Length: 125
Ligand code: SF4
Image (cartoon, rainbow, N blue to C red; front, top):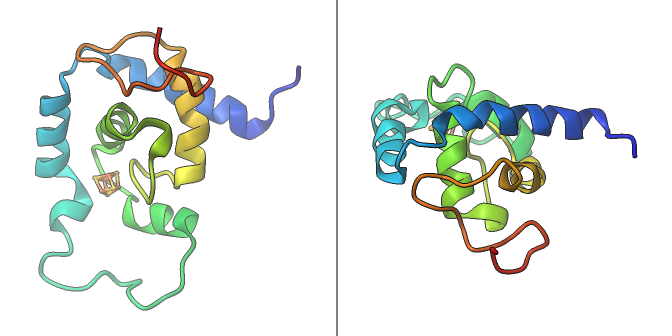
């Protein structure tokens, strides 16, 4: 089977997230709250794109650009929302995160578990 470019990109991201495998969920949440651009950079004013009609993909590109904790944000969202993820997190729109989730599940266990949905949408073995 030939993988599309997007599949290969998502597989690469799943590999990249392996470095966070042993970081507890609470620590990930603290890192994202403390360092996530969207958590503090717009506190003093509206984001420049406010009022524009943006797709999730465009919003992810604009809002998350330069955020230093994209991987932590993505890992946290995959562990907590799993395939039911919605909106923009970790510099990816939800369609990409749902595709990534399938590859991420195959990377193995996490220190404090993942969501309860297995690769085929059933219970985790
Ligand atoms: S990656 Fe995006 S959604 Fe996540 S903390 Fe950074 S700016 Fe916010």
